[in-house]
Image (cartoon, rainbow, N blue to C red; front, top):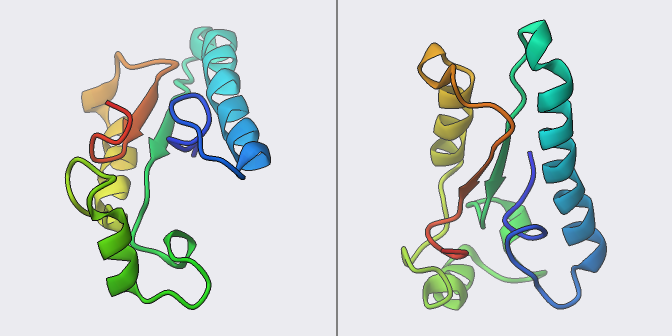
Length: 112
């Protein structure tokens, strides 16, 4: 798991987090090339804000978070955990067998 913060988007005050998640993207591409001959596919998923405690500020309700993020996300809402899980499941399935070394951004258009 990477994040839309890092290689795709910047956020003031999140330098360490963004750098570590950008590193996951670079590691994904390198590991994919290193192990494709072994039959191992390596990909990453970079979600945006998800309906989880990490997307709320201290003391903030989910309703307040939703109002704060509504205009910043083109889709107008945060992702459900199931939406991100669906991307992971697809990458784990035979339907994505030709996908190697990619960083799939699942962020409701935030970095589009």
